[in-house]
Amino acid sequence: MPTILVVDDELSMREFLQILLEKEGFTVLTASDGVKALELAKKETINLLISDIKMPGLGGLALLEQIKEIDASIPVIMITAYASPEDAVLAMKNGAYDYITKPFKVDEIKNIISTSLAKTFTSQTQKTEESQKIEGIIGESLQMMKIFDMIKRIAPTHANVLITGESGTGKELVARAIHNHSTVADQPFVPITCSAIPENLIESELFGHVKGSFTGAITNKKGLFELADNGSVFLDEIGELTPLIQTKLLRVLQEREFKHVGGTETIKVNVRIISATNKDLEAEVMAGRFREDLYYRLAVVPIRVPPLRERKNDVALLVKYFLKKYSEIFNKDIKGLSSYGLKILLDYDFPGNVRELENIIERGVALENSNIILPDSLALAAHRRSENQQISLHGLGDEDAVYEQGLDEIIAQTEKRLIEKALAKADYSKMRAAELLKISFRSLRYKVQKYNIT
View 1 (cartoon, one colour):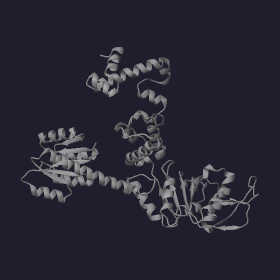
View 2 (view 1 turned 45 degrees about the vertical axis):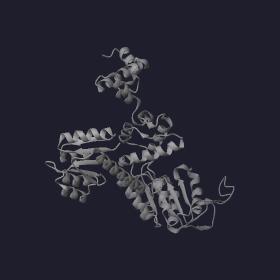
View 3 (view 1 turned 180 degrees about the vertical axis):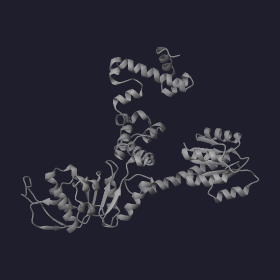
View 4 (view 1 turned 90 degrees about the vertical axis):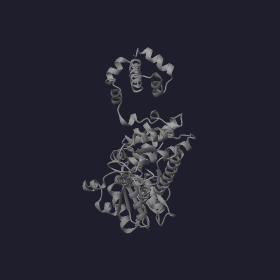
């Protein structure tokens, strides 16, 4: 549910609004003045601000101005007394969504809140749709916005593009988007992963061969450059090419021509080359493993796709996209991810990037029996920690000690410790502790007696 920040120097008004809004299902934060409100707004995600105009220190109008600097999309509702309508008008001019006068009716403020949040949601949805106009690439972070802009600017040109980034960041999606937004979108887009083809066959795959040119060449075969004529070739993992193939590729870039393996005829092609690598090609050039002249031919326009850990504010959007995708594939009605599950993902570094996140969500949807993905279905532990680290996190000692005690004893100790922590968190209410542990009251009472927990 949306989070609403209520700011008023009157305790009674803060408490009244908090009770009212929490009954409606909202998460409510409160502050007694503008300074405290700003501190909260910088730390928390705020979906709506309700503020009194007249407050000591930092007043409502000044707060409005500074909140809009933090996030201009946050709707602000100002509360004003009968005697200050001019302040309300000024607030509207400065970006407030609406204002309400004291004393106000409960239904009146409910309607204003509902309308403002609905309008904001619609605006954010449109913004998200706008941010996802580059097909298949999900993101609304500043880094992705820059990439979207770059794709649209360079796609109509014929410049060669070098896409760099870690494995799983979506480099091929960027390459396809460049082709699809180009003037030759109706022409072939031919991808090839350089490392996936044996060294003795890569030349034939790229440039084709004539019958009898080598063992197994039983017919003439066109290469990828011929197949992509007037279109685009995508050379993934280009840093894996051998020196010989690098030399032949450089000739294609310079002369726009090549010969079949074993052939004598010169073949002219008009192909745009989009390449990608997860290596540092500049370092490869310095080390003498990659031709410098080929590097500069390929990297006319370089694009770096950032790893997911550098654009964490895209995680929730990606999760939503993959949840929808795999709910449809597995014919499940998954509504979303639990808040703690999302926190786990936001704290994770994703060494496998977007590809790993997609795999995690696919697995979660497949395993989950409820309509909410819970942390247990995310199965991140295997990626994040070794078995020994998992054991020590639960305070169970090292691996040898675990084997000495035996599985039953370890499980009993862990269960007892978790029940004790749940009871402490629930102020020793067995009913609330059972709810926290998601077990029945009778089951908890039995375990408390079994482990002699006082």
